[in-house]
Length: 98
Length: 185
Image (cartoon, rainbow over all chains, first blue to last red; front, side, top):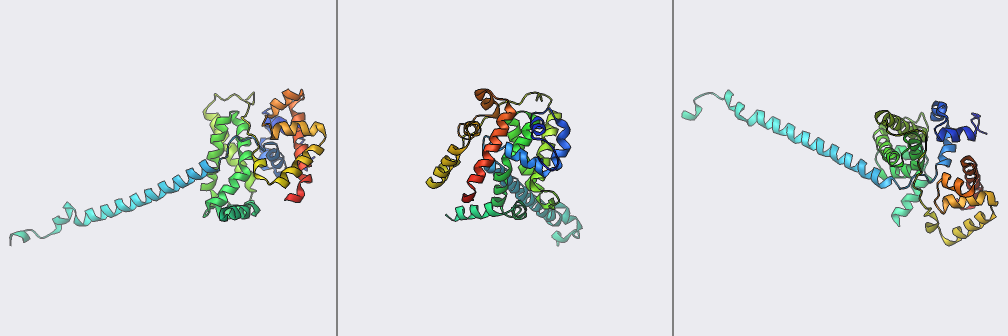
């Protein structure tokens, strides 16, 4: 019996969905989680490592690309302000004619 | 060779040490996934009652956990932290999609245990000997679960036992084997 006095039977019922009142208790009870971890050994039909790590790498790639795009857009914006069509408006008129 | 050595080193780290290393080292996070994926999947499956959805949720839970690594301060155990992420995701999914009935647990595709292929011959022999020494009432459900890959319900049907009796006997069988194989750790 665990220190929390939750029986194996109640945890089995919890797993089967007929003891939802244990939800909060299990979320905070290391002993009950230890029991469930043991019960669920071998449940997962596939190894998640590869798909999860691939997803994380892809997310990081997107963040880097997003950051690069923002840098490029920022540089283009600055260039536009400095050298774009509006930049000539401040030039003294008539310079080209002289 | 180098990779294998590294894997062994990761396996020796605590969860907290792996979390600390994971932000900069995806292999460390991979070890955390290996350790807790059955648990995270089980937590999700208990709520959504659909193995395919539970698998997707478990995957998403680990991705979110990785994003949240900088905020993990170690107040809770890593397993509790993952449990909360997975159950919150699953509860949100059930709320959004009411089509998952909660009454019956669908059969989970079980995997056969490939571990025996990886262990060396001496370990295999010792393991077989340890299993042979188990009392029949523990050995039969354990072998059906670990080697034949049957679900708890299938074993209960095959042996004509209540499912909770099967669960209890498999847990007791695993613990007995663990004690017997302690020397290999």
